[in-house]
Image 1: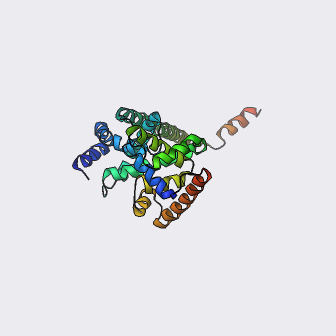
Image 2 (image 1 turned 60 degrees about the vertical axis):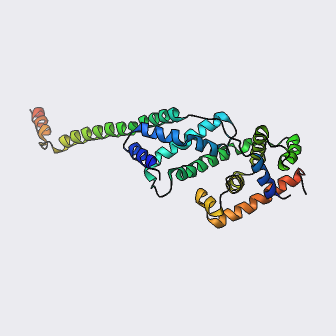
Length: 83
Length: 186
């Protein structure tokens, strides 16, 4: 008897063998809702990071764009040390 | 595709969890029957069936509806079962010597009740479990599920030639295993 015949006979002999009845619907839905929640976490961090970056950009913009008086303080300090 | 499936898939994609619950209840026992070829552990089968439905949910937007929903689930079930074998391949147990003797009776149709059906299924599982996952998969699809080469290729994503080559190699390795234990010959 070759291996194919042995396989076929074993399959025939196992006909009618079935797994126990199961109900996983609640477990599947619970698993999916648990998976969905952490998905919001990257968006939360992305939002927080974007807000922080925007605040930094505004602050940097104010510093860079503020009218600067060239050597204003230096002139005052030079006057102050003159007799 | 059945109307009920189509309606529930659309509702699921619109965010209706209960609709997906209906799909799970409709197909879970058919999927369990399929996963029973990948594990004989009643606790693990629930885990595998759950994995199949979670994976199906994640990919549901890719379901085109060209083939029945159950066929699409079968492809996912095969992938999940194969992954299970791959992770457990090191734990495959050897078939006890007395089982090799019992194999004679089972293949000679000397026993034909429900208990021996379960025993034959268990023996088939242990016997194929000694092969590599790829060999085991191709033999399971061709001889247990009785798929054609084209159907097995569609299920696995392999080419038809690849299925044939893999099946030839798997049969050769099974032959070597059977020869080693001097199984019945006629």
